[in-house]
Image (spheres, rainbow, N blue to C red):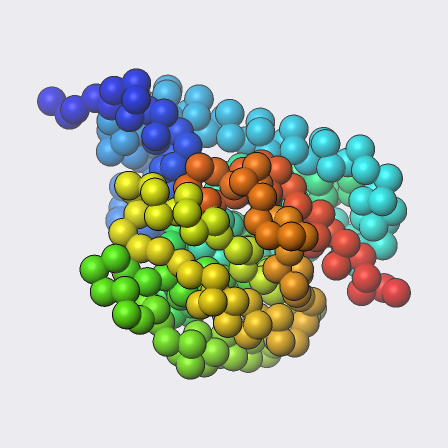
Amino acid sequence: MAKKASEEEKGILEQFMIPFFHVEKRVPLFPGKMNKEAEAALFGISEQELNTFRENLQENALQAALEILKDDDIIDCLDKIPMDGEETIVAFGDSITEDAQGWFTILKHVLEISTESADFNFINAGVSYNTTSEALRRIDRDVIIHEPDWVIVALGTFDAQRLNISPQRTLLPLSETWENIETIQSILDERVSNPVVWVTPAPVIVEMLNENPLYDFTIEPKDLGQVQELISGKQGAIIDSTARRMGQEGPQAWNYLPDGLHHSLSGHIETTKAIIKKLAEKED
């Protein structure tokens, strides 16, 4: 009999695992990838519990979207975004993108609510902890196959990780990160009519990350800063080029989960607002 998760384990699952783990993304070739009963058993919970967790995450994202729509400046920006409501929009990223209550889900709700007769096709192509190398390997099957009108790329955070067992180097050298994002840019420029939208990696709160027993790596500001500079220099629309959306004087804890890495709802709201404001500039 499969081991059932304890109440303490369920709390960890709800905050740190279920939002960032979708079996169909991790094992796309498995015939049983959409079997929710099997997925729930993997977590040690019932299918009903898994559904409840996922419904709660969706509701959180919806409420965050409704909060954003109270902002008159955002309403003005939404009127300027060059979309007619029939676009296919793909988010290409890591766990901060895959997050079931994350910025892309919030953006989805904002655009669907604010667009008359909306018929968007939103594809969340975020896969947790992906480096730019891992993402590049799957860009054809996860992004290009959908023939997107817009692609929002949010990668680079996990390139900068230093493994605890081998802290003398980043997981990817900066030169490889540069080559990967250049290749991603080239692929998308050839196949997508609108400019690539690049989301600059947000800072992490190193002390919180290092104290979390779930992770076997750290991310130093100097390493992530170099990745931020690479992303900020790309062609297209750059979201938060100074990487300050989580706090003008440095990352603020309320914008993060207790791991100091993944974003809370307030942090995701800041990213969503930054994307909306940048897209609205296109017509100016």
